[in-house]
Amino acid sequence: MSRIQIGQEAPLFTLPGSEGQTVELAQYRGRKNVVLLFYPLAWTPV
Image (tube, rainbow, N blue to C red; front, top):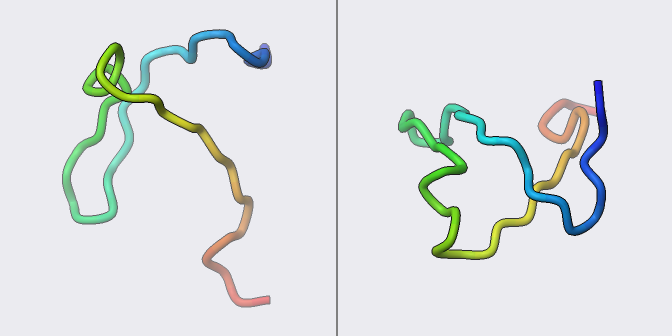
């Protein structure tokens, strides 16, 4: 798997949203800045 470098455009993807909707990166391209974050195990008990 290749990594995205700083400043490089992210590939288009679709994910389930927190309220049951579908969220696509393409919805925001050219309209808003988007920050991609990854928090492994963020909602699991520690």
